[in-house]
Amino acid sequence: MGPVEFLVLAFPGERTGADLAAPLDALRRAGGVRLLDSMLVTKAEDGTVGSAATAARERPEAAGSTGARPEPGLIGEADAAEAAELLEPGSCALLLLVEHLWAAEAAEAFRAANGRVAASVRIPPEQVAEAVATAARP
Image (cartoon, rainbow, N blue to C red; front, side, top):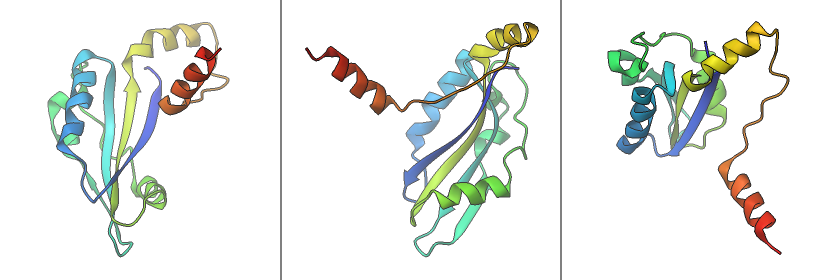
């Protein structure tokens, strides 16, 4: 199994845009990721929090190139409550648990050599762009 990542993608409004599904589906079809579970969390203007399974969990093709179905229930209500704390009233979040299939072979080699991930830091694209722009200045 490749590395697994839990993502909380926050959006204004109480619905995600339809244009979000296309890039995720493309990654799955290309074999880059496998969706393990997903959930939509909403925070109404009055602060009421709701959560629901997403349709991706119900589509067999959503599992990626492995043909395996997503594993419903890996993302739970405790995860939804934590994600809701990050949201402003009148917004929502798509919670995704994905396996990075592209890194599975490397992960297996690390495990076979008794290696371990000593650190992993995700750097926002804005910070990378800023660093590149700074480095390019004379």
